[in-house]
Length: 316
Image (tube, rainbow, N blue to C red; front, side):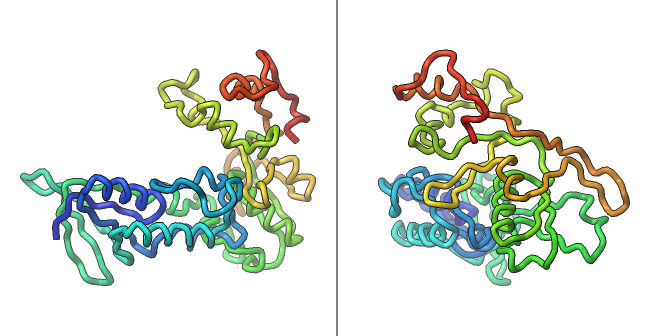
């Protein structure tokens, strides 16, 4: 079998690439190890909601979201959207096909893509390979987890579904990025005792002056800034703020708010052998200053004035 291009991955990125290839008349196939949107189906918890409003989740060819523009849709609704997109665009996708290797063809200008289709091995010759499988679908477990006693159940965020699936007792969550804080809220809602081991985390309001934070960032050109244009290269490693799409307009998440709800934050993890596994630097979240000034100038929104800054209290 030979095609001009092979796309690996049948999530939103792979489907979007397929749309552009089809528009240009490029013969291609999309290979997906599971089903359309497999990772969204099997590595998200029951109460999961996208962190971006619907207007930001449009795929190529879509002009308006199916939901209200500022809605935050859940796991199952998003899977249904991707399924519908694949069907309406007649994406040439092969599901249940696992790519085992990609190699340049000796002495040629093509690639050989080896696949396992339900136990049947075959090769696809192609001029181009586009990998759209994502970078966060393989769970990473801290090394110290191997030293924990067997009676301590360890669950990666990819395998967590709901508080009902977690044994009775207190729960320690390692990590305070989006998954960590949202799962912490899910457990707190169920009345569980939650310990949160966290590093320093930025804090930002979900909405500001009646608009979602993402809308301000887009208007300010934040997502158009390339790494080489950053005023300080270290900004690439800056802590990302924690936010949530749960609720009608999503909501602000902060370590302070989680603590007020009963979460117990910790700076260090010490394993069962008494060894220090690292300092996660749990400190109060830093506020983002100068926001009103920046977006006010770029978006023409009243209220932005040079030198303006917002106090930590304003960010709640």
